[in-house]
Amino acid sequence: MPIGSRKPLATLAAVAALGTLGVAPAAYANHDDGVEVRGTCTGRSTVELDVDREHGRLEVELEVDQNRSGVRWQIVLRHNGVRFFRGTRTTRAPSGEIDLRRLTADRPGRDTIRAWAKSPSGEVCTAVARI
Image 1 (cartoon, rainbow, N blue to C red):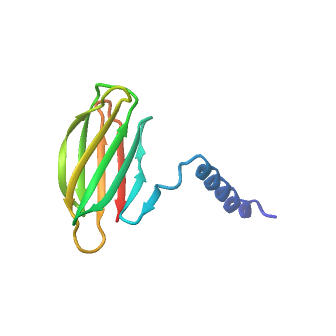
Image 2 (cartoon, rainbow, N blue to C red):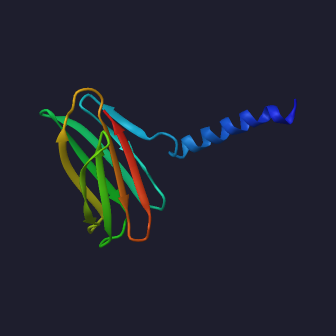
């Protein structure tokens, strides 16, 4: 067997290994009225974005977990490309996380919510939910 024909198998094996480590799938829960998404961070923090339909609006909940209290993060939330929140939040004890909840209109058709958060050290966390 030529060496070149082994590359696709090696790539497939690597992708499968990442999936078992929890790296590959972004969306981890869909339910009737919403979706929960685990995003990515450039450092050790974690980010989760939960979007639910609620009385004609979208309830957007962002959780950034750094495991360190007292750190101010810059946060931006966008709905279909339009910014609906920009501000700073500080991680709180005992868990060292930020919990942010905002409401936005539930527009006709598919909605895309994007979350971006940046720490003072330059770590960036992002998550995208489509509902």
